Image 1 (cartoon, rainbow, N blue to C red):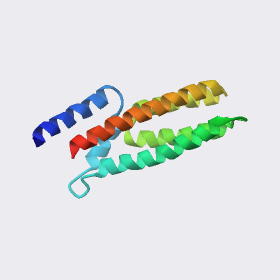
Image 2 (cartoon, rainbow, N blue to C red; image 1 turned 90 degrees about the vertical axis):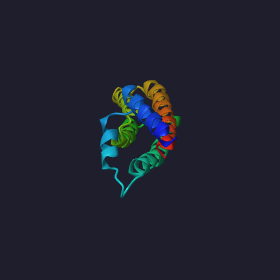
Image 3 (spheres, rainbow, N blue to C red; image 1 turned 90 degrees about the horizontal axis):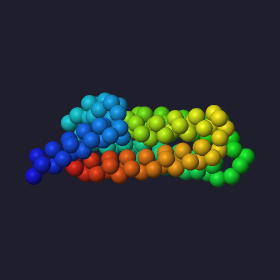
Amino acid sequence: MKNQKQRQAAYMRRSLLDQGYLDEQFIHLEELQDDANPNFVEEVVKLFYTDSARFIRNIELALENGPYDFARLDNMMYQFKGSSSSIGARRVKRQCSQFQEYCNAKNIEGCKNTFQGVKQEYATLKTKLETYFQMER
């Protein structure tokens, strides 16, 4: 039974990489995991969820009504992108970069639309990673 679950987890991990949800940074995190710290990756990802919820909430508040502080929005998204990079959340990171481009162009509609994409990619990745970690256990 355990072997089948391990195979499913390995397959899911491979597809998360192949589909671009994760990049090599996730593999580097896994390489840091050992018997002394068997849940290292999951713990790092849980910290990412905590940080992400805060970043998303702060950005939502900043986007609610003008005047819009594009420098502040860009800075918050820069931090979110860094947090995403730290776990290898490739698609989330790409959406964050797109958001930053709209900030630089001072395009609030572009920011708002792209932010929906950021949240969507984040939610999708979170669901997929939670499933993956369940298989790993």
